[in-house]
Length: 164
Image 1 (cartoon, rainbow, N blue to C red):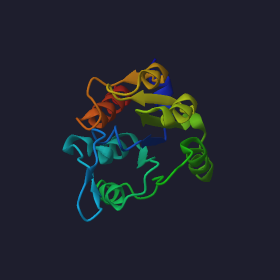
Image 2 (image 1 turned 90 degrees about the horizontal axis):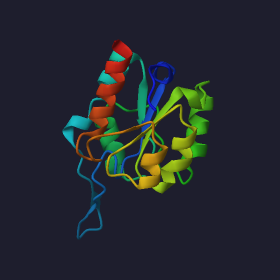
Image 3 (image 1 turned 180 degrees about the vertical axis):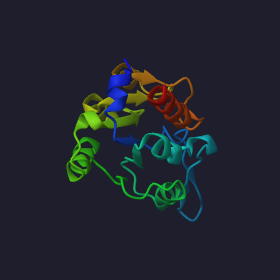
Image 4 (image 1 turned 30 degrees about the vertical axis):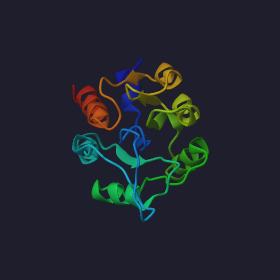
């Protein structure tokens, strides 16, 4: 259950990419390159930091250039985790580097490889079309599906809860 008390402890907001920032689809081109479709509404990370002081980043097992390009476009430069085989360990290192604890982390996931981190995060979010086990582990499940504005929904929820 999502509580205002747990949200007040958040300093870092991390989100998975494929299936959360995107609809999970990947386009493969004849030259071997790959592309993803992102929803413009999900680019609201700047408001989260401006209005609450919470910094943001991606936490993904992928290391494609197009993900790094999207992070750069969104102003996410200092807290990204790319190519993480073990997201829990990678996030723990990032938290320690900044003298934060897991209670200071909000994480958004959609698939089974996100479960260990979701279970340790201070606040766990899931998109509506996530795996059932992921939704069960979440404090909040979005109304929207991944890649359809779900991150915007979460960011707006956090801002709203912390402002009032």
